Image (tube, rainbow, N blue to C red; front, side, top):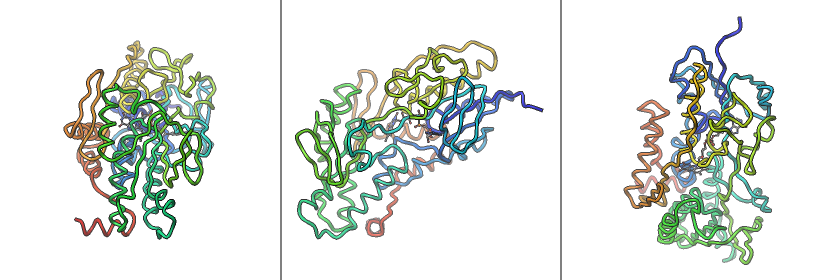
Length: 412
Ligand SMILES: Cc1cc2nc3c(=O)[nH]c(=O)nc-3n(C[C@H](O)[C@H](O)[C@H](O)COP(=O)(O)OP(=O)(O)OC[C@H]3O[C@@H](n4cnc5c(N)ncnc54)[C@H](O)[C@@H]3O)c2cc1C
């Protein structure tokens, strides 16, 4: 006998997808069957990726989906969505499986965009996932584990870290990577003064989507931390030796690209969706994909005014869970109201800037506020004890090279 339950398929186990699945599951409706499809077994807490790349435990950034949904009736399938059609109500996974749905939530997020700058994709590190942050961390350790019998010019390149992009992920990483590089240098008995960190920003200021007062404070903070900031400098190309700007060449072994994202390329392979220039799906007033009645779009995937933050994705996920519940009860859906959320950007240890509407505040209090926001998020997806463990682990150091491990042991 065929099940009469409505099948809700949510694709993407990130902020928006997890929120939608949890909120729907919490309603315990006997009429709904929830399936969450993601390409990874775990949820990635991206706001802490910069900590992972600079020596902290992966427990905060990498949370198994089974722990999130342990006590909920949610089917979790691991597959990479590769295409489909919202006209035919079907998605196809790389595994060859075909997924039919009554309601679909598209939550595949975004991916790094290299803007076709020659050489960047091949040579730069990026910071969009746990795998990429760990790759960068491994590379940082490797830099210190080679004999320095090289020319002065090559030694400078060895310890010059260039971060391309002055958005939140670029400035967060810049604030931490100099401290981390100096720490690694000391552990390996190399002069910490060899470490240089540059931020390259093509716009006239850092954090251009935030108020100018935020840019000023972050600029001062980074300068105090010894980071060099080059504004109005776009990268024209990169090769194995370094990065090239219009008028400067920077020889560096470490280029980290944080300068651009675009919505998942997969949306271009799903028939019936209309996309904007950034690959985001055009939506109507209740964030259903334009021209559809049963496809909702959340977070970075949707062409909404404040897409691009975890907070918006969480908000969207909650809204969609309520909307689907309303549809199940044959009620009308309340209109989606795009909401600008506060943002806290931590820069180096013990300091963060807070911005909301026209308010800009900074200092150690806001660093703690950010810690509290992290904890509140973990409490919203995990049982109490587990949430506290994950949060506490965010402060725990976890080194992977024997020399640094030894130095850490003798320091503690
Ligand atoms: C380094 C960094 C720091 C950030 N810091 C902050 C911050 O401090 N505050 C803030 O508000 N925002 C921050 N953001 C932005 C935030 O991460 C995103 O806005 C948010 O993740 C968007 O949520 P989402 O649900 O749309 O997508 P995501 O959270 O990216 O989730 C997408 C999910 O889809 C899965 N997926 C992708 N492709 C496929 C596929 N083909 N098939 C199946 N599954 C797939 C992914 O594995 C992932 O689970 C940061 C981003 C980065 C990169």
